Amino acid sequence: METGRVKKILILAYTGFIIRNFILGNFLKEFLRLNSYVEVLIAVPNPNDKKLKGFINQFSGKVELVKFLANSHKRKNSFTRNLDLHNFYYYTKMYQKQSSSVSLQKLIWEGHSKGNDRRFKDLSQKLSWGIYKLGLFNLLEKVYLNNWTQSEISKKWLHFLSKEKPDFVLSTMLTHAPRYSCSSDLPVVLMANKLKIPVGTYVQSWDNLSSKVSVLPDTLSKVWTWSDRMNEEVRRFYPKLSNEKISVIGGIQFDHHLDKELIVKRETFCKSQGLDTNKPYVLMATGTVKWMPNEPMKMVQLISRMHHLNPDIQFLIRLHPKDHGQRWEKYRERLDALKARIQFTHPEQEYMDRGGFQPPKEFYRDQVNAIYHSAVVINSSSTMTVDAAILDRPVICIAYDVKQHKGFPEGRALAFTKSEHYKILTRTGGVSLALTEDHCLSLIEDYIAEPDLNLEGRKRIVVEVCNKADGQAGTRLAREVDMQLKSP
Image (cartoon, rainbow, N blue to C red; front, side):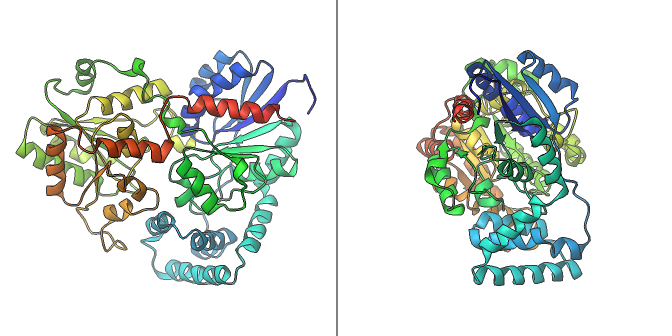
């Protein structure tokens, strides 16, 4: 690299989650503070988003939004989808990882398969098992990567990178591969490698390493993780990556949790949510319809019974950012009668996976206050367990079902608690598993009576997931990326 010239970095921001936490969080501000002479290109789904452009304007022309060149997911028929190269890679990688989290995700995506679709899947799995047992996984991965290298989307990225000539690429979604395709970042990473452009990637979510079938090429310059435990997962699932390439910086999405400026008075928050300031409330954090299809029914039943036992206990239902609330509509009248309130979190202008976002201060002000002022937090094997632990609120994980689900003989909710990533939390003793509705009601009353129950376990949850939550993860990543950009 030439000394003294303006350096250029390409940041991949395929979803609203990344836009909120990286681009509008602490990372980008700190990175630009460290670099007086730098040009930042950010690849996003909609570079013409007026709201996003308004935020970017604060950086005085140093940042340019460009179109994220996404792979077109053409709908395939059952035969093509199940017997293509990606599916073989998916199953073979699943056998190699031997992770309960991957197996669980497979069951969720494939649980309703039948007829020819089921037969094609079974055939694909058997062939993949043979590939794995014959020790041919590395060869399969080489063929798989070569296939993506030759793809049309990779050729588009090659043209873009050749034209823009970035000095470094920051990947943020490489560890997140959907069921029927590679990660959105993989074609970019492969083409950057072809042009000898260094690439670093941040592990997008605490479950990605154990639950997703992603490729982390050993050509990566750096892999940034959340914790020492996550470092161990990288070494376990991606042994080709050398230790010096793996560094802990923390969980960027937790940077706002202990920001005292976000906390408002209890009276102010409760009034904004339609809650009685003088009565305790239970925060119920929900999942997505894909993961928890019968969650509204389960939550309404629980609220109804708790209201009958103790009408002074209130409920605030915080919906997942990917839940726009339609599935709750038929329960609204009943919830209103039970004085249960709903807090919406989805982006207004666009679906989150297509670049929709809420500004971090707004999103986390609502989330942090909802947790901070609650008596107990309830969720279903979600990241909200960690959010609650950081803010030291008692947390219950629902591990029972109200309807039987095919493929889950022990129960769907209980199976989630046994996933590779979540059972690490249950072992700390910082989260209580509610095995029945009666058990959940009892746990709520216990925690309201004694909030310090399992306090030490909650501290261990924080250490396991993000080492520490000090609000500096984005700053640490900015400094790490700065060092990579300035290295010869």
